[in-house]
Length: 415
Ligand SMILES: [Zn+2]
Image 1 (cartoon, rainbow, N blue to C red):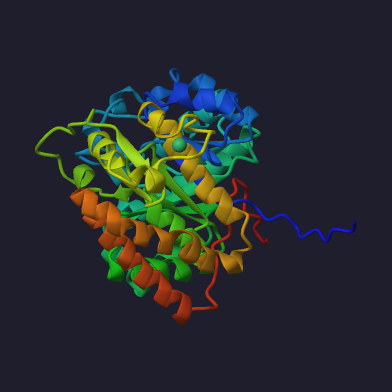
Image 2: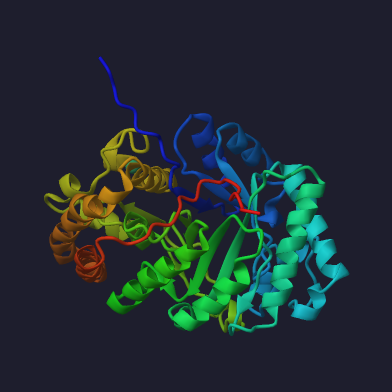
């Protein structure tokens, strides 16, 4: 039989931010040969604790990306976050642009390269900072740091390690075409291999019709840079944005961080972070999380196991019986599959397949689920809203641009 082979395109990016206690189950999944997504984000404060995970990930062809935590080190709320004072490039007071000018910046780059080299990381986030305006003083410093980081990597023989540039800004700036134009002109000459969007506030819980429409349009404008775009902390709405070509990759925490909210960084939070709350169960048919106790009550209602229990034996062998105890494996497996199945669909068919294969059945299922569990009413409204916004985009913009897939490669630059 003659088969016509179509060239295999690069996979879309699916990155997980590895929390302090996430390393053991992720290492087990990798050893078992299960799909955890395309990349893991490394916290330098857990350098020793997580080092075996990075070795296993690299052997499995999973990217490991060092995050210098420069936003933490330059904001009053960020300085209160765990492990920040243990970083070799940290300080006692939040960094201001002058702290990283010249030699100090070169020293930071050298320390980052040492850690990349020692842990064998495959990529690194540029040490960028929050931009309050389009001519924020951080912009020039971050450009110097990014260029310096590239030179330092190259000098150490790490020429194939890509640099991803986190663009950290408020959404009202990101949604402004003039602001984006200025930022693009500034970023174009920099040696960056992907642009990571940390846009505040945006994500699954802040993606009403106007925000979603503007974010889509802003991403399409940023495609002019020719670099893959990765939506940080976008969660389930990020999957839709990949289906519509806006993003080439997404990033989230393990069952947390599906929305970018920088308010706890930019100001000192009045209350401490809380944390250690109830496990959140990923209801993959709805692309939404629900606290364990509520999920348990919901699944015990008539017909709800049939609609929402996990039937995937690779994460939940005994179905719903296993999901509460394995909620992290369940989430990682389901998210990796959502992204892999989009990757396996030709890019021009992804939007339609997302609408018909996920969004329509999800919003139908959410009607009954929200009657049984009122906490899901917000999910029901959100899915209806996405259906309206994405559906209109499919009609209004049939010939839109696509982000290149975030596939962990250096971008070839024309001389
Ligand atoms: Zn499962």
